[in-house]
Image (cartoon, rainbow, N blue to C red; front, side, top):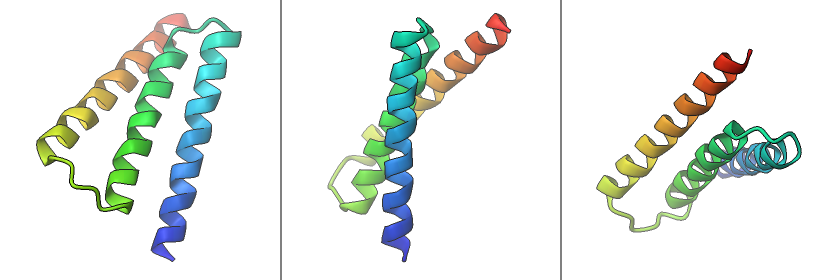
Length: 82
């Protein structure tokens, strides 16, 4: 059950990343790239845990921090545009 939920979450994260790329390309919204980057990091992070890959926890902390900065930048730019 947990693996099914985790897989569903990963698939939805991939859809969000794809839609964000579409937003960046078709609507010319730069923040779409940052949203896509954030969600691709989430996919990577979840796959590391699902597949029990031997990735340094320091690297994972850095990668997750990059995702947080990325989504913060995207949201800030969405607010500025509104």
